Image (cartoon, rainbow, N blue to C red; front, side, top):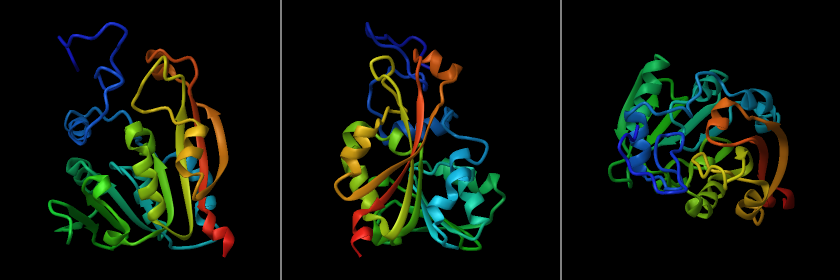
Length: 250
């Protein structure tokens, strides 16, 4: 992890073995995958997505769903198997390749016009397209807009200083009628700085409230021994539905 690293007084190691309260870089995240420090990855379809998929679909079938910072999430294959078209963005090429290998999916790999160094990995059936690039280099010009979004482990991984830029990008990717399901975590940042970063309701309102309606769908106690090791005694997971205000006006 970080054996031999001098830890400043008042600091401690975060869940990745780094000194906490240091902003994560693109290289840091790629390093997580290379070192297999991917405790954020789930080996099952996320329960909140299974429970609230109908809220994203809103009666629609075969919609386009966006996954920011997708990793190798099993959620993507689960949705594609139901006939939806899934588009993800992930900075780690290792994660993208592992996704297709572990799901036993054949794919094509090609460069992305207008994005030097970026590649897109597409499943042979066309249901899954994963863009290997920096999230902030992505835009609706690259892959259009989306009918639904599932944001699990993405906003909470973004450096707080980048949140406004992130929220602006996400709203520009929302098509008319888009249903954006956002999974967030809330805890005392004085006890643990992250990542994952605490994203309380007021922060969500500040990020999305001007252009979007925000509805709290679920709030639950998610404290486990893992978070207790971080020094926390409270850890709350919340699901929010985000929709464009312009959808209400039309």
